[in-house]
Length: 36
Image (cartoon, rainbow, N blue to C red; front, side, top):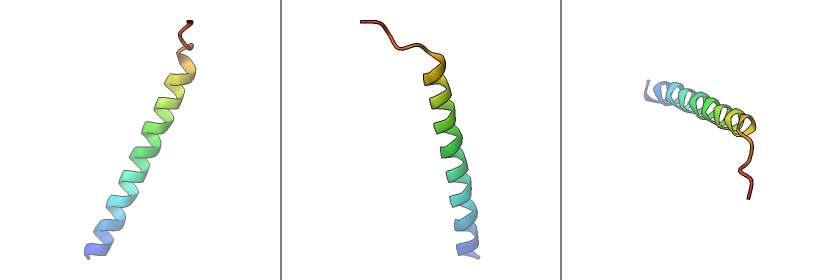
Protein backbone atom coordinates (compact mmCIF):
# COMPACT_ATOMS: atom_id res chain seq x y z
CA UNK A 1 0.00 0.00 0.00
CA UNK A 2 2.77 2.41 0.93
CA UNK A 3 4.84 1.45 -2.10
CA UNK A 4 1.85 2.00 -4.39
CA UNK A 5 1.31 5.44 -2.89
CA UNK A 6 5.00 6.20 -3.36
CA UNK A 7 4.82 5.19 -7.03
CA UNK A 8 1.80 7.47 -7.58
CA UNK A 9 3.59 10.33 -5.82
CA UNK A 10 6.75 9.74 -7.84
CA UNK A 11 4.78 9.79 -11.10
CA UNK A 12 3.09 13.05 -10.10
CA UNK A 13 6.43 14.63 -9.23
CA UNK A 14 8.01 13.51 -12.51
CA UNK A 15 5.03 14.80 -14.48
CA UNK A 16 5.15 18.17 -12.70
CA UNK A 17 8.92 18.44 -13.15
CA UNK A 18 8.58 17.67 -16.86
CA UNK A 19 5.84 20.31 -17.23
CA UNK A 20 7.97 22.90 -15.41
CA UNK A 21 11.00 22.14 -17.60
CA UNK A 22 8.88 22.37 -20.75
CA UNK A 23 7.39 25.67 -19.58
CA UNK A 24 10.80 27.13 -18.74
CA UNK A 25 12.27 26.05 -22.08
CA UNK A 26 9.32 27.53 -24.00
CA UNK A 27 9.66 30.79 -22.08
CA UNK A 28 13.41 30.83 -22.70
CA UNK A 29 12.82 30.38 -26.44
CA UNK A 30 10.05 33.00 -26.50
CA UNK A 31 12.13 35.67 -24.76
CA UNK A 32 15.07 36.91 -26.85
CA UNK A 33 18.42 36.97 -25.04
CA UNK A 34 19.33 40.40 -23.63
CA UNK A 35 21.73 42.33 -25.79
CA UNK A 36 24.99 43.38 -24.10
